[in-house]
Length: 271
Image 1 (tube, one colour):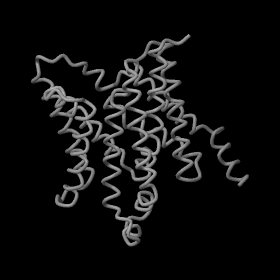
Image 2 (tube, helix red, strand yellow):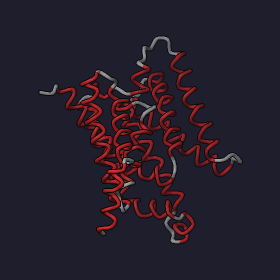
Image 3 (cartoon, rainbow, N blue to C red):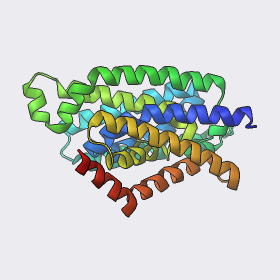
Image 4 (cartoon, rainbow, N blue to C red):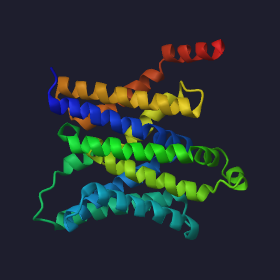
């Protein structure tokens, strides 16, 4: 019989996978992988500030990620640099600042590996409540902005012409990303969150024939990666967070095999 901590890890991981899936689809559609990386790097600065000011870590990570996202929007409007250059600036500077702040706090002992790569086996019932409670809020808001967000993803100018306010929708989307990263940080760590956002969505894209179907399939792929990754970690004594990402990668690789491609082609012909 599985131990309680392992069951909690599976439940928490599935919760993160379900919440990350639809956001990951927009990350893939909008080619925002580097943006996800930027927020995940900024999460380490949030952890450092939380320890320095002795406040809640999740709250601090959300605030820092939200500020970085808003800073990106402001810089895109004023600076002459390209978006990828701005993302690189924000990502590496926030990560470096986080590490420097942690280095100055010699009186605090920090599990840096746990922050970078997660410690899903240490999740508590409170963490699970936060994941599912915060995740429900994120999914509800995403459902509310789904149509204008998808419209601005397909054609930003047309969405603006139809009065869908793509700028405001984009800011809401960025804030939702910040919430998910704050929630998921303990599960897979700040360096692997982007992988959990992107890989299941990229896998689902090969089979899905609509945006909503792709979001559901991405959630299923992410959940399967959590389960396979955790059982693999238990079997071979490997780190749990990276094992989940490796499992997601293997599922993506399977989607590239000829057998999978033939299955998708037959489904298209049947339609």
